[in-house]
Image 1 (cartoon, rainbow, N blue to C red):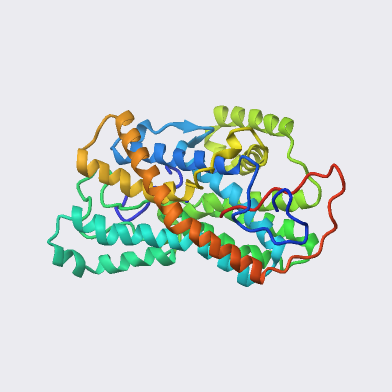
Image 2: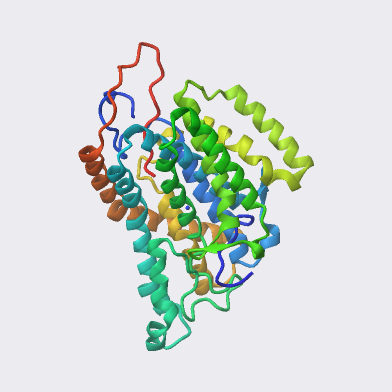
Length: 388
């Protein structure tokens, strides 16, 4: 694998009581399991990446037919497809929609990119300081802030078991933002055509995902076949959202049945897992996520750390190797998770939460939700909006 490429996908970032006519802000209280699921997804990415970063990729655990870190990313994309579609469906205002998406993604991303460039890089590079800052691939690393992935910094971590990659997790961000761009376009079609249109996009993504990586087109430094592996789950989540708006319920018995069938297929025909997983996993993930489980639903009471964990984990994992060498996996995971959780907590309180408050003000100012009748007694209240 080339040093400039990421870990590929095959190996692995209205609330109850709110009046029906009021715009729901991103920081509204939520009483479901979505935050917990995203936290699990972020931890799964850390766990799976650890095997590659310490030089033991062949021991990478496989769960439900996927490397564990890939399953973590699948969780993110399925949830995002559902919630981002809900966000646009609720407001249909491009200013508030794109401001909200941008304020969620870019401030925290800019922080981690700048820290890697101006703090971590100069401390660990094998190059003289002047040569490090003068290198062309130093300044081009800023492209990560505008979702143009670059994984290496000059002279940084070239002798590691997974060499040169400063933050191999960043490849998923342009893949997800591309989906954000498509959602409003889908809604230009008549209501009856939206699910078929997303279905066509999903089918195209399945086809692209089967393109061999070395034959895949690369656009904006992103390999299309890698991105398409995750687009299918975003599209499936979006379809489930549109079906939910038409009255579909997420049923536990259906989710259990789908899980059983999927595990049988994954166990007996593993070569077909990536071709059919989108049929099963998004429904299972969203059934769990939209449920409300005591204690589990309070996973974000100290802050929504999943995005910060995802952004910071890879450079922390490489830095731990740089400082203390390759350790036992258990020791590595404890040290990495502790450091990353602390950085994610700082990121949440210093950057992400203030950005979300600004995002809420933008939504309140520009959102013009359609008037709705108050729900009848006994009607389930719609799940709250995401912090995504």
